[in-house]
Image 1 (cartoon, rainbow, N blue to C red):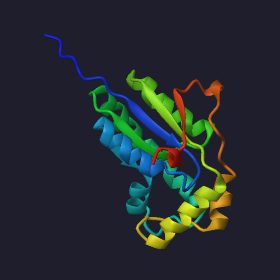
Image 2 (image 1 turned 30 degrees about the vertical axis):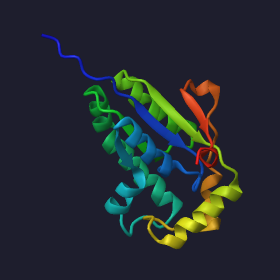
Image 3 (image 1 turned 45 degrees about the vertical axis):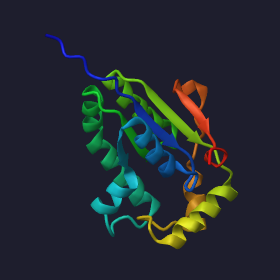
Image 4 (image 1 turned 120 degrees about the horizontal axis):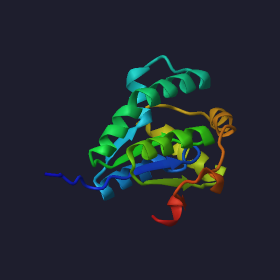
Length: 169
């Protein structure tokens, strides 16, 4: 007897800090009854007090990706849709996400939140003011981290939707 598993999908996001990635990721998880895995939550717990520079963030995030990749693949193979609230903001990071989908033989969707710096900085200031986000990011850090950002391109062979969160509210 063959058991048919429900079709799973991997949802991914990319965009600068404050572009609305986490908000959209939560909406996607709710809409698709998918498991939400949020990088910021994991890093805040696993590396509390040990993430004080961009270099430390990069190292910690890489470790986290290595640790969760097999679990994400297994969940997708089991028919559980997954939303990765990870900033897949470089070609290599998006390749990592695409490889998760390819390894589990499931479709993927990348949402590119294309927001101008002014919008992102305004949202970042609001987020910092609430104190509810695990990390406080200064304007200087915003620009330093944004320097690494590479918009997705057709050459990456991703199912990509350019998304403007401010238009859909």
